[in-house]
Length: 372
Image (cartoon, rainbow, N blue to C red; front, top):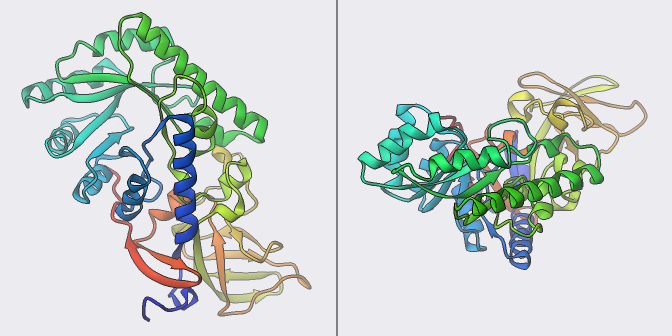
């Protein structure tokens, strides 16, 4: 198979990326940021792909956000030189890796406890370095982070004097938006995210702690919280691809989804059941809404609205058919928009980059499996 082959000649399951839609998605977010005078620091845990990260930076992103040091190492090796780790760094193994990275590229981290901050500060002091950091704020997700307001001020007062740190501001992720059920709830979460951060930044300034960075995250909320005065940075991740969760939440149109999975029908044992060659190891088991099940099935089949992927085993996807309605035949190819692109990408080693139905090139998912 040559690179110019029609994408339907790929072996399956195959990860397909529409280059034109990807480019439009990147430019759309860059335009929003420019209009609202906020900086973009996209989260690469969605795509794990240096080629995409470089396109984001070419469009104006100031650097990237990662979840894990393994992702940071991959990005640094690819030439990305400004990396924010939005995940607690705990343990001497990780601290040593962080120091090593900071000798090569500009690094920054979140801090949400003095216990985690002290050994990092000591390591950077001993290395003769200072590490940029931000205080992680819990804006309602109930995951990592200190509470907004006075609790954040108290931690910041302790961190600002640690010799290994340069405290630059605050950061949050309003991931609770993925449990919302309509546009009104999404809007409320986004406004709350921005207001909580702006108010906390004001309290820090009043306490004599300068705030350069007020950073918000989550694709469904950044175009809301990013408009709140006082917010300086947005960290969307999923926006480059979008997926069925973004469509259901109203933060993307179906036409703006750039990522899909190509599968083949491998069995049709009954009139109401067929099977494809992608299962939970291809799609994951996410049905949206932090488990509340906002989505109908395990992905959306393009052109087959009345067929549902209603069950997955590890290597099989079960298609629920309506006898007398839409049907498929063995060896048919179907294109599926995943529920959650971030989990799907980590199951593949490469992406087939497509434009107008032709495979232009293959990009490596270089940070695949980087969990440490």
